[in-house]
Length: 185
DNA sequence: CGTTAGATTTCCT
DNA sequence: GGAAATCTAACGT
Picture 1: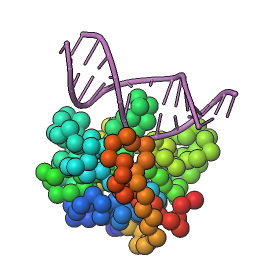
Picture 2: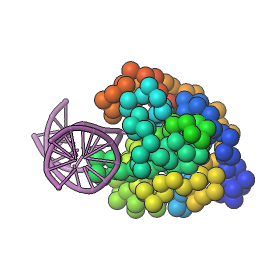
Picture 3: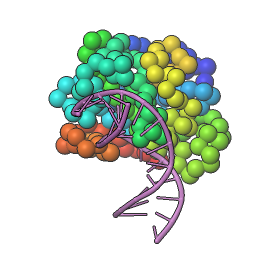
Picture 4: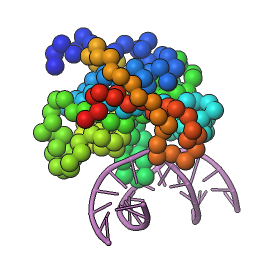
């Protein structure tokens, strides 16, 4: 765990287009609250020409972080119940983010079980992974290059599978969902 | 100020 | 495979 401190991904990684960041986040380690997991599923949300993205509505109190400095967290409450974690991409001033949809649990699995109230699937969904790692809206806007929420490079190069995004009703035909093929499990 | 739809999960049949 | 749970941002009046 200590050698991961030096492997925090620096800001330029995130200052690229959302599709590239979404692809390259696969195989990285997400760390928070004594728990961690390898990112195995992501979706890219674009700033323009993407009606499914919250940023399509322009800059509002809710979406301003998506237009801000890359490498920060965008956390929102969905369906009144679930916290969803996104990582802001694109240079500052341009909207774009990556929804983290699934993790493979690595550290603190017992703690995850407690947080998930002993549900069978610990982190196989956007609302599940935030619950497992103890992530909530107080982390909205947090800088991932500083912590306590961080992403680390494990130097893995997973096989990437691409599909359309799921769980949305607009712009459903875009191939913006990415899965780490051999890590999913 | 009231209405509505939503980047989901879980439990039921 | 379908519906309920539960809250709030965004939009219309």
